[in-house]
Length: 105
Picture 1 (cartoon, rainbow, N blue to C red):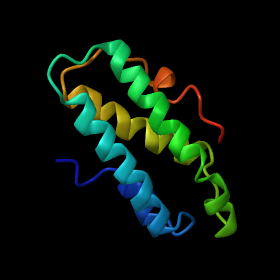
Picture 2 (cartoon, rainbow, N blue to C red; picture 1 turned 45 degrees about the vertical axis):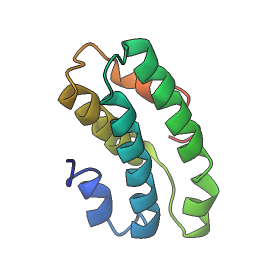
Picture 3 (tube, rainbow, N blue to C red; picture 1 turned 90 degrees about the horizontal axis):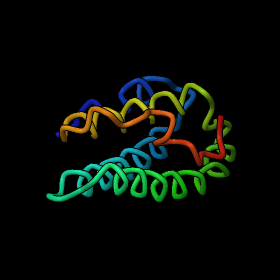
Picture 4 (cartoon, one colour; picture 1 turned 180 degrees about the vertical axis):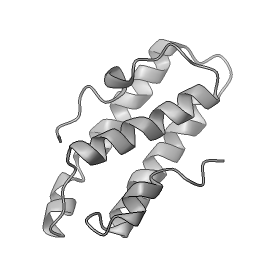
């Protein structure tokens, strides 16, 4: 469905592919939740917050591999999440609200 998710992170040697693949899996799980019938905007923000908590937990793994979840990574992740919600027909979602509880920048 979203083969190009996080492609710029995969292409950038700064980000370890194994960790980017894990972030992508989180986004794919988020996409499956968003795509279910009856999902509201409120639900999407809750799903996003839960996913970001999981990604927050990955910060030490990135640092262990001399990388980080920096501003650029935050932008890529937020853009991927926006692709997901817009593909599902949600066009009024605020991009910053999707990643508001991130502990990386």
